[in-house]
Length: 300
Image (cartoon, rainbow, N blue to C red; front, side):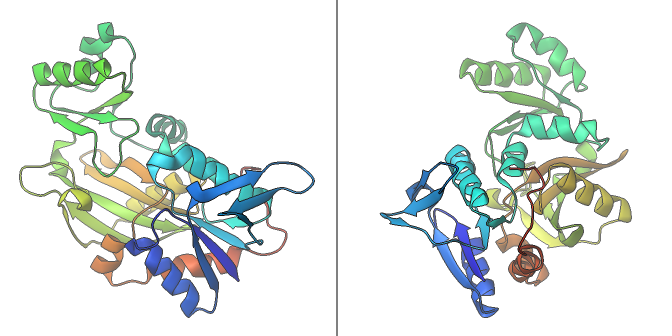
């Protein structure tokens, strides 16, 4: 099978592991920088060109598109979808998941429990917005933030007002969210492939921080998840239309809460912690799904 990995950096752990897993199974794997692609968009003969040449058809495409290039990266992915390539995560599902506000609204609509979250535009709403999520301490998040960047814990009401006003002064879109104190700076990352949770780890924030992201210095360990946590992780991924997702769950007193759904989860932390061949599982899933005549779940 001929498979393309859409990534700006083929030296990243996840990209290298996917290429290695694919080639070890006898597949032809090419890493393609989406920003170096350009497209001929027409109904008769659509095509993708790369560094001066028209690309041959790929049976499947693995999008490893960073948040900074979501718009152009998903446009390139849509073009591959037009050409009949099976996408490991469809373009529309990626854009849906990348928009934190939109994804949370979709999840809430489907009855998936989340931390209480507020969103407003006018600075006149700041006081009521803070009260809406239960007051301080609370978490302020940039809608476009990733890997813990643009996430601030405001310990007091005054601090919350200052942070919210500062972000608004930059014309940034923000979410205000209740702080789940009982989580103690830890969350559960569930790796979902298809309709299965294939791995789960607990990520713990470093001392003095509340962000459990491994990129921010957090640590990870194997963890056993409950049937309820497993069900909510799978439902969250399916609700957003994702074949592969990293679903982050907080353990609250009222039950598991979905904090975020990542459409391009990193593999290093979860493979290193669990010892599992997650990249191989992703390749095997592609082989299972990328059959002639498949149709996009979203219709493109």
